[in-house]
Length: 209
Image 1 (cartoon, rainbow, N blue to C red):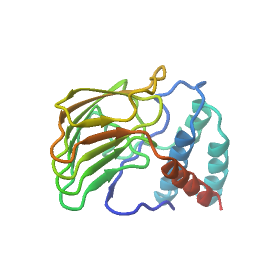
Image 2 (cartoon, rainbow, N blue to C red):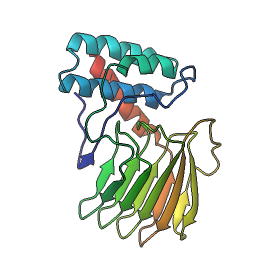
Image 3 (cartoon, helix red, strand yellow):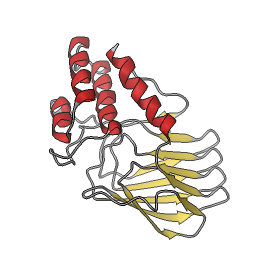
Image 4 (cartoon, rainbow, N blue to C red):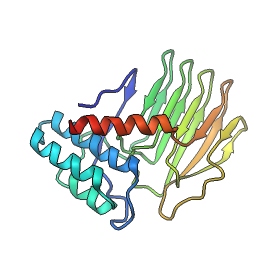
């Protein structure tokens, strides 16, 4: 099974349905499906034999259509409602939204003292646009977005470091409209780091063993 570290808030949903079937799949998208398959085993929906076979197919999949077929018979869990706003408060210890989760149309992130990390790398987003309202406070807010996604920071009151601004938006990729205040710690938008992608890849390889 896949296990996260620290305080991690996660939600899961049916994978890849927002994508065009013949579009090439990315490494992050393959690994997101692997994580969903692991969760299906924990829920009792798949046995280990089915898990191994589907994981092998997921890691070798070339298109979104091939990935979608692997989770087409897995239901969306209760609570994974993209129409319901998501509110995250960093508090004292900080909070992360990462792994395989369903992106709602509106997200409110308050950095608090510990900070908030919104990692969209392996997330499922069926929406063309997502609104993120951020208050950096003392802990800061970090958005980690896949290459090809776009982020509009015009709604921020300064204090935002957008490290993705030079990356072109891919056709059909989501647009994040970021607004709010930077607070003392600021707001950062970046792509996943190589070590983060390698860690996700290793999780998928461990699942096959």
